Image (cartoon, rainbow, N blue to C red; front, side, top):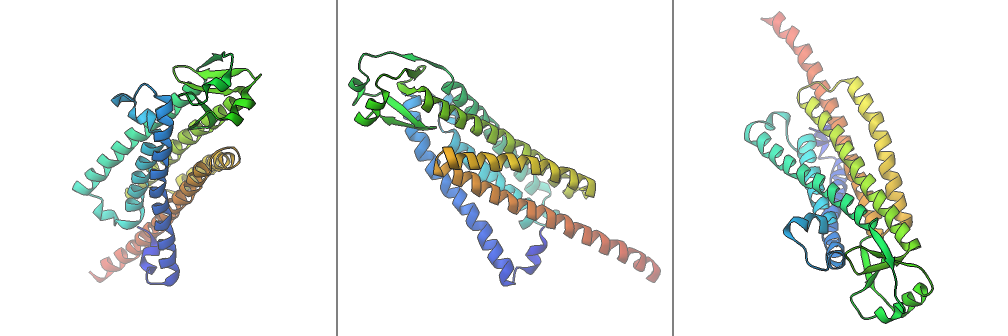
Length: 292
């Protein structure tokens, strides 16, 4: 439980909480935008139809973001909203069940990012006498990752006298430059997903130790330095998206960094509160014995 909660009646604390939950709401809004992108992209990458087993692969960003948001709210419950003694019994089992479900989805979404990476690296040369004749057909080209647009006259002219590449089992074509840029973004996407999994693994360990009063100073220092490295990787990924990728990807990456900074603050203050309570109890106990 956060120390800030004791000061909720101060304007500064109220503003902080409003800002925090505004970030969470913005992340919830991103789920809709990712759904729109995934739906448009999947109509091209799964032109023959999406099987039930391919839903997470086709809507990876949407499902992944939704699962991460629920997981974020679980961390918020454990580190700020609920008292330690409330995380017991049925509440504890419910939280752990939802957490396990989120992790299953997140890990499978990570597999979805890897599948997309493999798809973008499974290509063959595309040969045609007149690429402009494909205008108006179901053929599309890669503009950037997850964006496959119909061929236009301007794009067609750019593809003339240029070796073209086709993604296997799709009607998506591109040139080497666009393909390389998209493959790099896919690499960043996979790296970002893997890094976040490592971050939450460390957070889970911290929450586990804190609930048992075993989150020592040495453990905090070690986790801090590990997370410095991981958050640096995430920041670089966000910056790369800002330069080479879409605005939505950059904005979403930035919001997640801010959101988990709130969780880091919660854990720090939760740990400080636990130490204060332990100190108070250790001072009261001898006094009680003397009086008795």
